[in-house]
Length: 269
Image (cartoon, rainbow, N blue to C red; front, side):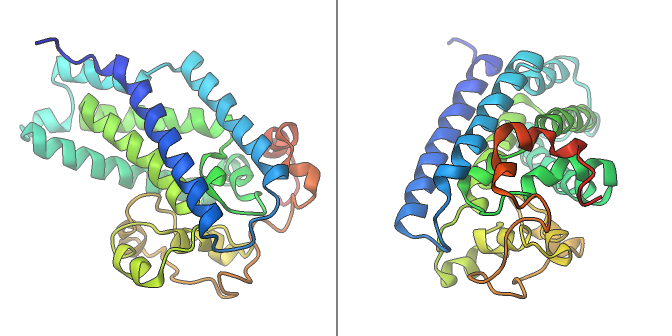
C-alpha cells in the first residue's frame, strides 16, 4: 500500500475545507443573517484579495513548512510527545488541543503588546463582521503566526496529522465564528460551553476596547473561561453594537492598499 505523503495532500485538504466552509457560511449568511448585510461589494474584494495575497505569500515564502517540520520531528522522534512516550492517538488529540491553546495566547498577546496590536488591529478595523473577516489578517501577522506555530510544533513534537487537523479546524472555525449567521439561541447555548459561536466572537469585534480585548478563542471557548477573558454578551446588544475600531472608519480604509498600510499608521496609538 502506498504511504500517504502528508506534505502533498495538506494544501489540497486545507483548500478544499476552506472553500467548502466559505461557501456554506456565505450561503447561510444570505439566508439567515444576524445583522445588516449591506456593504459586501465594498468590503469583499479587499478581504478576499487579502486572502489571495496571504496564500501566495505563505506558499512562496513558507510552503508547507509546518507539516514538513512535523514530518522531520517524527523521523527524529523529537519533542515532548516522544520523550514522554505518549501513544500516538493520544498525542494527536493532546497536540491539537495544546496548539489551539497556543493560538488563544498568541491572539491575546497580539492585543496586549503594542507593537503586535498595530499589526493585528487591521483585522478589527472591518466595520462589518462576516465570514470574510475570519480570513482578514495582515501578511505580517500570518508570517509571525507561522513562526510561533513552528516553535510550538517543535516543543510538542506534533505529528503531521495533528498539524493538518489543527490547521483545518483553525481555518474552518475562524470563518464560522466570524460569520453573520443568526444561530438559534438554543443552539448557541448548547455549543458555547465548548465552541466559540458567532455571537460569542462578535463581542470581540465590538468598537469598545473593554469588549474587543475579550473572547480571544477561535475554536474552543474553554480557554477564555479558564483564563478569565470571557464576556458573554455585548453591552449594546448584538443588533445595535458598533463593529470595528474608533478609528480607520473611512470607507477608503477598506481598500486593500490602505489596509496593508495600517500597521505603520500612528492613528489610534
